[in-house]
Image (cartoon, rainbow, N blue to C red; front, side):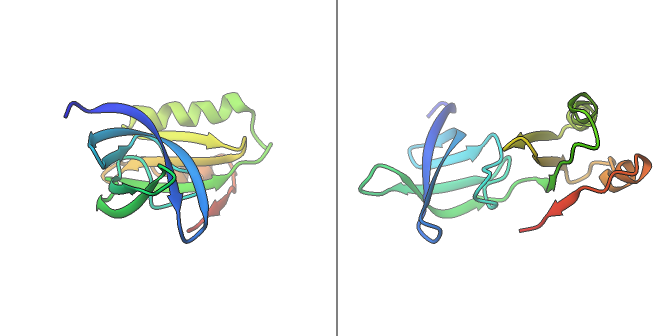
Length: 136
């Protein structure tokens, strides 16, 4: 099967929550995330997972096949900096082979390659930026 980008609904039985996520479809029931799923912290950029469809046609995760190859961190952004200043950091993250996204207008998720030399903590320290890190 040719990989194609699709949008699927993923139902989490434990949380009784359905979310929609963009993924690459690798086979009939195997997918790779191309973004971070905001409500399900297991589905970060590059995670491959198997699903089965429930009676409502929503995908339920059977198992994680391959963990993301990125280090993922989430932060609550503040109004301390302008959006353009946050974009400068985002551009640097992209140059390093990473990915970043902002959800709900103030939650930043940053994915960096595991071997990346970019030190977010040092950058934050240099700009006296103390964002609240959101831990799973």
